[in-house]
Amino acid sequence: MLTLSNFSIQRPRYQIPQDETLEWLTQIHATAQATLDHLAPGERDAFADRLRKVIQRCACGPERIGSRGHVLADLGATNAENLALYDVTRQPHGGGTAARSRIFADVVNAYFEREFVDEVNAPSDLIHVTCTGYVAPSGAQRLVGSKGWSTHVTHAYHMGCYAAFPALRIAAGQLALAGPFATAGAERRADIVHTELCTLHLDPTEHSAEQLVVQSLFADGFIRYALRDNQTGPGLEVLAISEQILPGSAEAMGWAAGDFGMHMTLARDVPERIATALRPFVSGLFAKSGLSLGESLRGALVAVHPGGPKIIDGVRQVLELAEEQVQTSRAVLFDYGNMSSATLPHVWARIVDDSAVCAGTLILSLAFGPGLSVCGGVFRKL
Image 1 (spheres, rainbow, N blue to C red):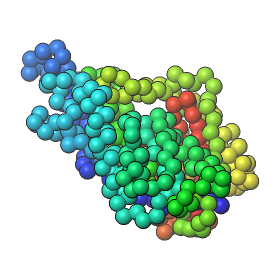
Image 2: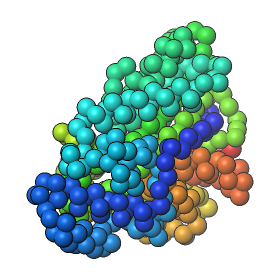
Image 3: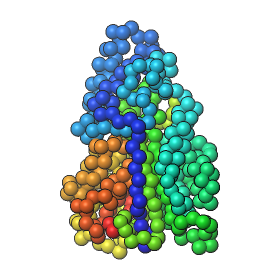
Image 4: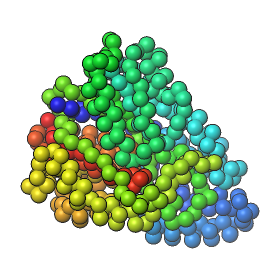
């Protein structure tokens, strides 16, 4: 029996209400444009007024996201002396990719040190999941080296919001191989660690509605949890996982390295594309679990990656769900924003910790990302 357990969350150092974040975005975009075009103060303020209206119309507002966490003091700051990355009066695009990578490395290395400082039993495997920074050696490798562990380190990188499911597949495979490839002196478990620093990837000169939507959604997040094949609870028993890439959808969502951080592209019809494929995908997932869709789904919780409010709304509509079935996903989105791959494990952790969710409850979990990839799992709470 494969079991997810031992969820551990560390929140980013800074937290800012969404209404303040949106106003900060307005101001930093306006200042960046003023720097580029040498705008007079009145012209800059007029640009800010126009942009504010666009943000109010298209961005994810404070009624859907209450606040977001971030590792930089820059977000919300206006004093240029305190800006590590987004001093747009000198660099209108923000710091370059090299500067962003240095910050990522420093933050992630420190996080791994804090997270495992009291860990006595080394895991047999450690899987590092991220799509927001790549530095070798990674924080996971540095940790294992400093501890003197014989733990195997695997990197599950650049898959975006759905990456928790491939990480589970990797972990399950590693546990299955534990016999012939056993790690000496380590506990038989695979630790999965997500480090997503989405706020390192803002370009304040990109004013399109698409980019403003992205910048109003994403946040930073860290979470660690374990997959074991010999634990009975508390946690989530993994009954089935699956993945499908939708044909002809490669251009619908993208995430690529650029000169000023990474750049996301997001087509407006992504929710509709996902909705079209969702019901047959979920039906197959339940069949893989040995369950019937109709009867099992009525009593299940649905832990959907809250890529945005429209994603949750679309899943609810297609699967004909009650609002309370998706409420945990909405709550995580409201409390933290979209933390890319770290978000769905936050939903899982909240379900495990929720005493109102009884043991034996089925959890259908779904996530989506570039590909377009549709991923899912069926769990049972222990």
